[in-house]
Length: 140
Image (cartoon, helix red, strand yellow):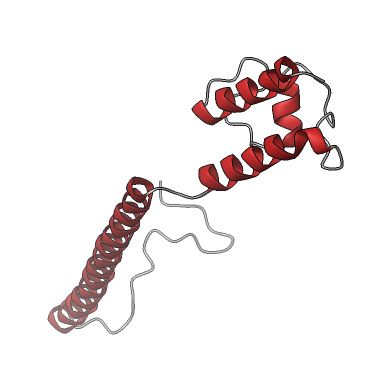
């Protein structure tokens, strides 16, 4: 095997590292099989037991590790997104608290109004007007 043969593999590896593959889908993981496919060879063509591939396999392993580590800008972006999530969760919880408080206040006001109405009218029985009794036709 000559250097041109390995050059195809190294070129394929560089295309994958840059995110501009010609054969495999963009965003594919970098491993022996994707490099082989990108180089126009069959899956499984790069084998660890073949000494000629030693440097290539090292380069593939290094590229895989390098690309799998998030860089500082990604870490910062993730931290910013987490802060946004916390901010919006707190805003949502505050809004829910206000809604529940308003519902409780409305309920209390309704009960107070019912008591005042009963005191003014002398009613001790709730009106059933509008409710249909069994066997009777509605007044409409």
